[in-house]
Length: 113
Image (cartoon, rainbow, N blue to C red; front, side, top):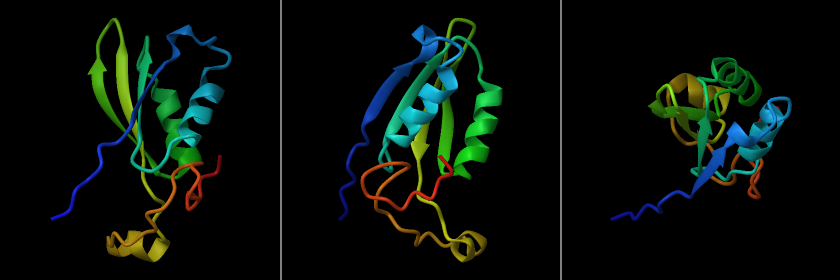
């Protein structure tokens, strides 16, 4: 029987961050996460351009899931997943390295950040 650790959930409310600095702050926060950690992002609007930038910048390693998408707040959980080698990604295999995260201490990220 395998016991899975509960991921750390880090709250990041960007509504108090200057709009000019938001994307840089978000990228920095994402790059500090370890694999499996969750950044619970709170914003005042749906950040579609940001989501596109994250997809391009991190080559699919950062996954997102909407928790809330309402008029008062948008809440999105971002998680870090290991980069899969091209052969494993093509075959659907899930034997990618499991150490580290996107900028985390264990390496293995491969992000463009």
